[in-house]
Length: 233
Length: 126
Image (cartoon, rainbow over all chains, first blue to last red; front, side, top):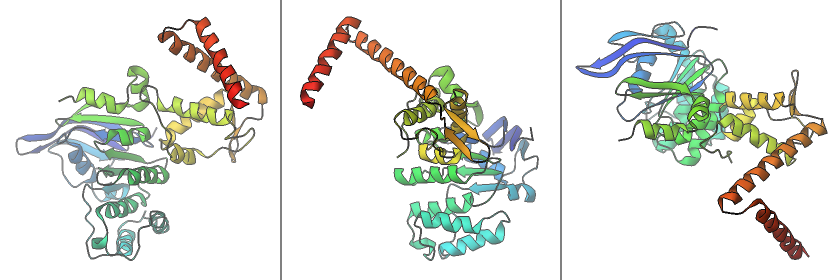
């Protein structure tokens, strides 16, 4: 067994006195699709930003395939932020070229064919696209990399149910067996069929980390039902 | 259209049930090549590992066979498929009897009802 794809040891992140994450210890194996689930403000995005190297830990450490976040880990991690950051004035094709310049593992042909299948106009400028279409472009870019770890922060939040299915299909079609996909969302019912494992996070702490099947076998519950129970307001 | 799943049972079991149904109803015919794991994952909109688990259950049951480098196939053994059909039939029958019992029917009353329903169907068929 190789090393964990993502490893957190005593990981904490404070914003001033506020603990966004507190003493998180978790180790994610390769080849899994894992849901990062929790109520609003529970620390999902903070964890993803720490893994992508956008934030630095206050305490503890986080390792991606054994590397601390930095140049090496960024080559291994494909990150989909909550918001799209692609400049308005660029065309879809410009964005593809930008990614090709930046990432050695970017598969240009694959991106083009995915965009065609999604019927995204390649020569349109980003600002002329709807929010949902922009999110599709961003997801295509992220999933066209041959990364070891995909960090998807709310990949289906802003799109309609039909596009949601398509996006989940895109994730299923395009991740490779050695990669791990971490998906943060609160649309649990929509994603739970594709999850191997799930992490519940609340107030910056991991409440549970288990396999989807074992939850159903042991408790006879879906993740969605379990979530409503654990996080009852 | 993605497959529908209930909340109370592991998804891999529901996936393998659905594949068995597809074999029994002839969607996947005897000896026919099955979709790949990845294709199944997209068809059913589930995780590839879930599909893998479902397929290996079916392989253990002898309903499908792996041929090296070419993929997975529905078995050519008619007897294995017939056994699966019998199992599925028995399961549905037991479940039906249980549901009827919950409505207050005895087994005899249920059988009588079935015979009446069958007659009714025969009449409407003519």
